[in-house]
Image 1 (cartoon, rainbow, N blue to C red):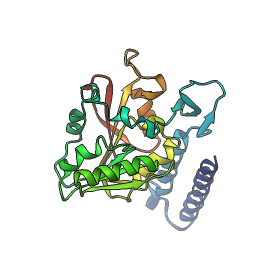
Image 2: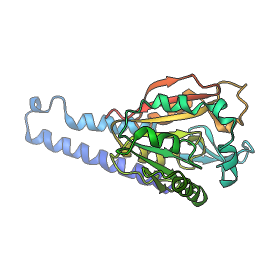
Image 3: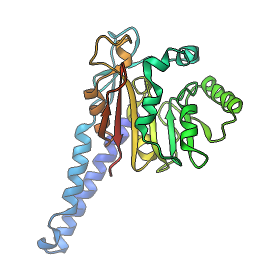
Length: 269
């Protein structure tokens, strides 16, 4: 809640300064030099961003899904996080047929040399499949907040003799990615578990290079036949709504997986 208050205070102060600056400019310069007024354009942009933010940013409800946290963001309940006990499930042999990782990686359109962030890398299921695709000049940043997952990643990197994987310990609000340093952020069945999705995705956007992409893989909420708990599913409509407030635009949706959406967003500004 403190972050939200700070954000609104910053927006309000910025608006005041813009309006004051515009008034001062009008007193010093002819009107024809102020068309269109830059202050009005900036003010309109601020108002647009402010109007998209939910108020309050997060809410807690006593009545909620038993598999959720009771914390809601933009009308969606945040799911409980899978702990280290879920590593066997992440590495299950059936995952190859159920989730088709090769199709997910193909959707990334890798050419080699990219810096890819695997956000919520877990045991490295996708990390170590992507590493050879980006080659020696590329890098995979395997981000997780759980020490046990990071230790698993380190052991596997050593065992596989992979040298272009870097483990990154993020936090609940910050994935600790380099600003303007990442080509693609891959988020596989993780976004719906983020405790602070607005803060994390704001940092993700900052980490993307111009034209960089965020690729979500999420179980389809639109399909009640998908055998996954409801709070662990995401609809396209909900993903779009949540990405709009962090200025990411959907560029493509791939629906070739049995149970999941592949949804690709771009940083266009």
